[in-house]
Image 1: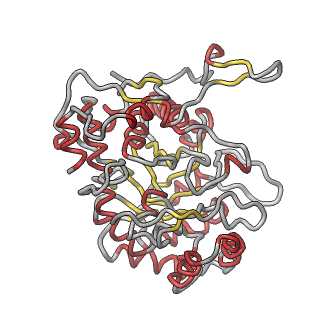
Image 2: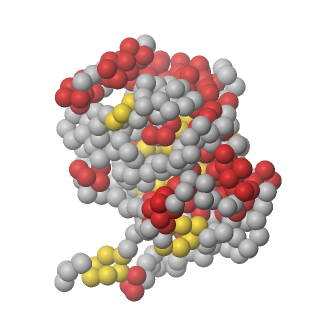
Image 3: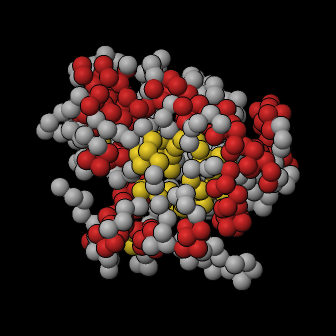
Length: 407
C-alpha cells in the first residue's frame, strides 16, 4: 500500500476548513497529544524490525538527530551520539565556533540568575565566529570515526560549504526559523539551494518548513532532506512571539505528502525529518507514523549528563539582539545519553530508551520498516493520554510491548 498524496493543484480540500469569521477560514491541525496509533492486524518481534535511516550514502542505525543547539551539542556529545548510532548536528553559529574554550561560557550561562539570563545570552553571542574553530570542531568529532552534521544560517551557507565538506562533515543543514525556496530581499542576495547542492558531494538538509507547496519547491532545488517544524520546541517561543506555527502531526503529514508527490513526479525521494516538539517515545512514534523518515530532538537530549548545557537548554533564536524567541529553561540531568537512546530505562515516563520505544511501536503496528510504519492508521484521540494516566501503573496487559520498551 502506498501513501496517497494530494493533487498538485491543491494541497487541501475546501471541505476541510471551518469558518473563523466572515473574512477567514481555517482547517483543523493536530499535535502529538491529539492522536494515537492503531495496532496492526499482525504484530512483529521488535528485535526484527529495521528502524534505520539513510541520508545520501550515510546509513544511521538510529533514526534520530541531535538538534544543533548549544545546550545540547559539543564535541563530546557529538562523539557519543555517533557511537550510539545516531548523529549530532553542530551549530556553526553558536558558542562552539565563537570561543576556543566554550565550557566556561556554558558554565556562566548555567549559573546566571533568571533576571540576567537573556542579557547574558545576547552578550556572549556577540563574539564573532572564528572560522578556524569550525574545522577544528568537525575534525575533533570525526577523529572518533563517527558521523556528524553541521548547521548554518542561510546567509553563511554558500561561504562555509566547502570548508565544512573538506573538514569531513557528513551533511550540511541550512536552518532558519522558516525557510523557503523563494525569499524576497533588497538588502542581500538570496541563497541558491540549486547552486549549493551542485557544489557539494555531501547531502544538504533544509529547514524549517511546515507547508505542502513550500516543501515541494524546496525539494525541487536538489536538497536531500527537509526539516519540519516551526516553533514546537520547549525552548522556543516563536509561536508566542510571532504567532507562527503548525502542530507537528499535521505539519509532518503535509510535508510527507509533498515527498510522495515529488517522488511520483521525479523518482527521487527527499527525506522528511520532524524537528522538535517531541517529549516522549510515544511522540516520536507518532512523528514516524505521520510520515517522518527521521526525527530531530533537542530538549530530551539537553536533559542528559552528556549534554553541553549542564542541565539547561535554550533555543537557537534566544540570543537574537532585536527579537529573542526563546529563553533558557532548566531541564535537569535525568540520565546518560546512552540511557535515553538505548536504555536500560530507569524511569517509566517514556523519556528513556527511545529506540526500543520506536521499535516496539513498529512491532505492535506490524511495520517492518520506517516506510511501512508511515502507513500506520491513526485516530484522533485527544483524551487517550490523560485517560491512560488515571489507571494503575501496572495496568498494561501487553507483555511483549512492556518487555521491549523497558529493556
